[in-house]
Length: 325
Image (cartoon, rainbow, N blue to C red; front, top):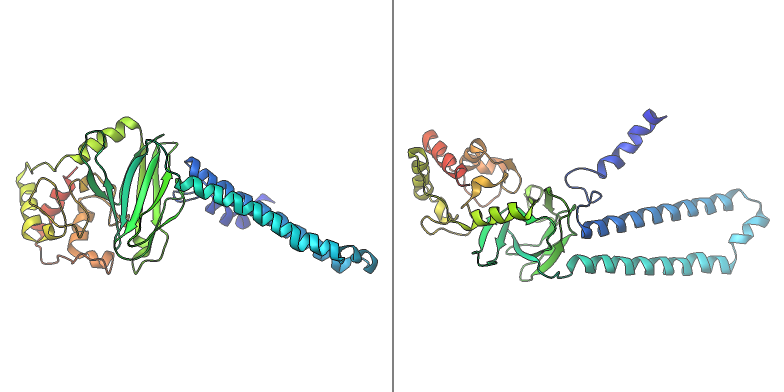
């Protein structure tokens, strides 16, 4: 019997787990969303069963018995009073959960996230005397500390959503919205743009990395520092290629010549887990492939391909970027 039921239950089981499941909550806010979903699911299931039972009763019972569910009182109670009461209660519950997600907690770590085309700029403000810094596509937070994410967009409407930690919030040009969460356990949680924003919407992911307060403080201290100058000839050649090839016109590496802000800040790009908003794992080979022909990997992104770089220069440039930890 279990073997026969397995194919029917498989879609349900798949939807309840995985790195991007709202039914595997890891914060109080996400648990509120999951509990609301389960309340709606079981409530809707019970109502569906009730409707089926009443339909079968009306079809197969004797005419005299059917009159019991054909009265004005029964129809008024079941068709008007019951829905009004249930939906009103559900509305109140939903508003309470939503207010909890956007509440401004005391002593929260504030992080600004800006939706780009198609990646995420992540800004950490100055805090406790430590200078602020900017990174991309990955958000680090300390476990057990409230976090306030202020979201906006500089192009079209995006939607910030990390199901295991927080509710969904729209990123609207000219407006700043905010969502709050507190990660319960250390881990890496995948997020996604949940509002269609163009050709590469599906490749606009990000990761929230929750770690201990000590590990987070050490990471933030490293991120606030400028990049170290290259100490090997190969890395020096890569640094020179970064400037001479025009990369510096769109990207910033703090500690080098002034750069642009059209693309992600690359000061510590080597410490990130993924490239191109979750599209590729971050290593020297994928860095080289992205630089040389990124339009084949993520068509329509704003970075031009650099197919004219010779192999040695491309290898040096990728090695330099990977060294920026």
